[in-house]
Length: 223
Image 1 (tube, rainbow, N blue to C red):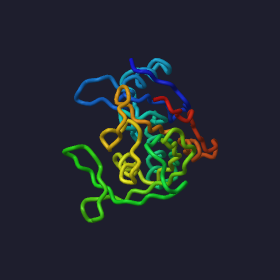
Image 2: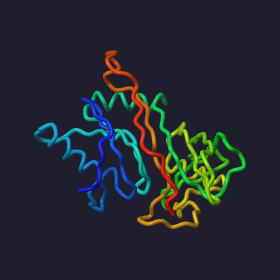
Image 3: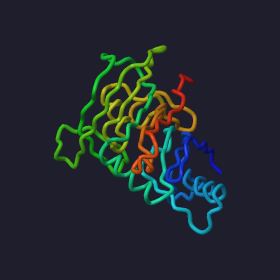
């Protein structure tokens, strides 16, 4: 059983907090995942029989924590997928980075390609090199002892996007040794947290629900 906290739930969706170090979805290692526990929760809490439907709409890296939304029904999955496709879902992250950026706020636009052999994303100037446009905006929340806390609005959702773009800027996320951080934190933790998710519940289609924003506490400097 992994740690799981329900942040919001309706007939179609469930939003949970994923701790760092926990897999969202099971892999060949056989390690128990967040989805395994969430399916067990739904089965027990709602007296479900047979297989439980649970749609994985977006992901967080294993060593990143934060807010994740899942679909409990095919209708919920369809509505959420459409919102991600149209970029009407807003995802907010906070990250502790090494150093202090020159600009208090900025928009980073790069082309990223995924090196599947090393499982890293790299910035390239050649947008034709199987690369995808990656864009995010950040602003500095505070500086503390040579580190900075950033608020990040993700505009595209690429593999390791925030980690790669901040590293390329010269300010890797604390604990992210894969992308150049000098600090190694317990359990390979990376100081990147998905702190807020805003979306329209599936029932909005019928005009019965308001837009939801689910937020958690902003991470504090703990090293």
